[in-house]
Length: 115
Image 1 (cartoon, rainbow, N blue to C red):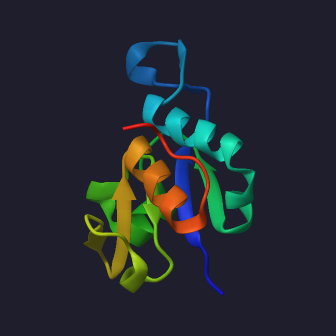
Image 2 (cartoon, helix red, strand yellow; image 1 turned 180 degrees about the vertical axis):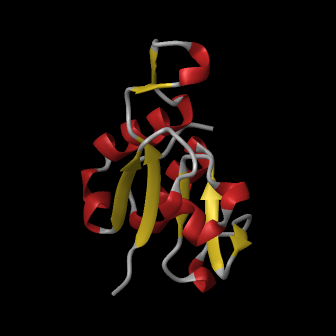
């Protein structure tokens, strides 16, 4: 059975355009916290932490070059994607930390961000 795929930026990372400082993605951090609070999601979702530099080949292969910003949740079955999911290359996906955490909680149970 195919699993939903969750793509996050591996932290910390260096953005060469901004010098040598190390960074983390605040949107990915929301999802990382949600994963810690909902450890049962690990059995349901394939989590992939990818490097900061573009192109992010694995993400591009699924949803296209224009959609490689992270975090991204790609649904195994587009027919089960929640309302508001985008589509590209035959895949349904969501963007945004809070949106992804809300969708995962609705899908697999557990805690979600407070509205």
